[in-house]
Amino acid sequence: MKLKNLYSVALCAVAFSLPLTGCNDWLDLKPKNEQVTADYWQSKEDVEAVVASGYYYMRQSVPSLLVWGELRSGNFYNFGTGTDASKMQDFDMTQSNSLAKYTTLYQVILMANSVLEYAPKVQQKDDTYYSAMLNSHLCEAYFQRAWAYSILVKNWKEVPLITWAYVTDDADFEVAKSSESEIIAQIKADCEAALATGAAKGTYEEDWETKCRATKWALYALMADICLWNHEFDECILYADKIIEATDAMRPAFIKNMNNWYDIFYPGLSNESIFELYWSYSDEGKNNNFASLFPAVGIISGSTSGNLNFTKYLHTLVTEETAAVLSNYTDLASGTTVGRIGRMYLATYYCSSISVSSSVVTVSSPALWKYRGTDVADVGSPRTSTNNDANFILYRVADIMLMKAEALVMKGQSSWKSAIELVNQIRVRAGLSEYVDLTSATADAEIEALDQLTLLNEVISQRNMEFIGEGHRWYDLLRMARYDSKFAPEGTVEDSEGQTYEAYKTQGFGDDEFEYKKLVINTIAEANETASPALLQTALQNSWAWYLPLPEADITASSGVLKQNPYYKNN
Image 1 (tube, rainbow, N blue to C red):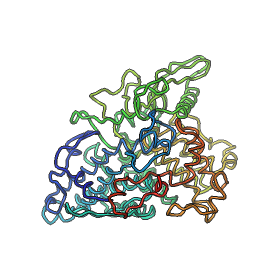
Image 2: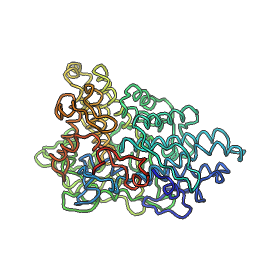
Image 3: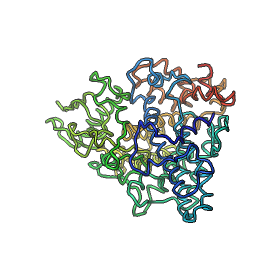
Image 4: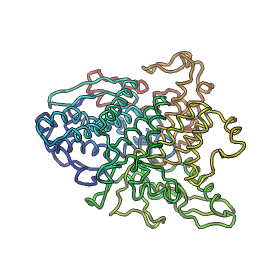
């Protein structure tokens, strides 16, 4: 990987082109010199500017986060033919695909590296830069770097691991890939280093800062996330509980009332939020545009607007949940006037029409509403040009609860009751019945009758419905498919170079050892709107097809140091 051009772009002094514009003066701070070299770092304000730049690039990554997290999952699809997006959703990418670029994430990393390298030296020049502020800045930089690498490892598995600050214009660093285990170890080390300072805050002076700058809660969430990804279930539960069982007065807390579910998205900065990327039209008259990635009218009605359209698969799921919620709260036989109930209609989605006739619910042409709606539960009252500034949530408490539930499921049957307790809370808030009534006399027998895959699928299904359009779905499916490596017999999984052992080839797809992978591939093949199921079944047998190709430009510029991900070597 070549860093010179990347870093020059990251720290250019001229105005940036902003596909996602800013929210306030602090978040628009950027260093005013060409490179953040040793000469730049003179005061605490200089450090603050680079910390702010890290958040700026995190916000710039949102369109990519949505596409990477949703397009391959079977929930959304792009209607184009031969586009980079359509090739991604069909698992037909090459290394020249524009959606395989990770530039913005490395810009986050390089900002964080600069803070970690140079901020401690500023104390020698600025006697008002106290240790408490320094350590707080270091916590934020550790979080930014760890978060960026968590996205990289989930999408590419193996990428260059860069932990140093770029210094001069003429230094070209050609960096090879590090292994997934090395990257995960660095993510965990960064989070642990931040927490070890004792300076990770629970709150900031401003409400928006508490939800939009790194806190101890955000660090706990990231640790729970990466530990779950790495099959470290006890550690995942440990960090999840630091949030779920917290007693701090200003802790993040699960919103129990289903009528308040949409508060998470409008006005945002809710009690449930742990970390979100912030925009505010009222501060500077600036909006973002990521809602435009989703259509204003559902593709099923014939619209061709938007890049992320509901698939028929997702359309069916939201219709089924809408019907289930309405049956719990209305008399479907007599018909009903449908308003916002739970997390579905006028919360997650809106549509051209919704009706109930003879107890049958019909949802026509649904499209995502999370980033378009307001506190008025009415299709006629969307956000306008003066408040199209929805935040993008990276972590919230419901996410952590379901992470913990998943870890409990994977630990074994003795933990399943605790997992179901968490799932029930999510379902009840959504207006659904409990998965298992744990107060009933038959509860133990019902749990005994479950198997791990069935219960895990319920957790993943609840994640799907709770986080539609939030960039989680693909990673949930991928994490589920990866569980086969935990249980597969020795010699039946791919090695680190992508070479498949003969035992794996002969056992093949469909054996009990690969039931998680089988379920995931079948789900994707069923849901995908544009590729043939047979082609998807074939492509996804190779687990390296689950990851993105490294960018062609970086491969070319590396003088042979950076090796392409195995699936794409001959593609």
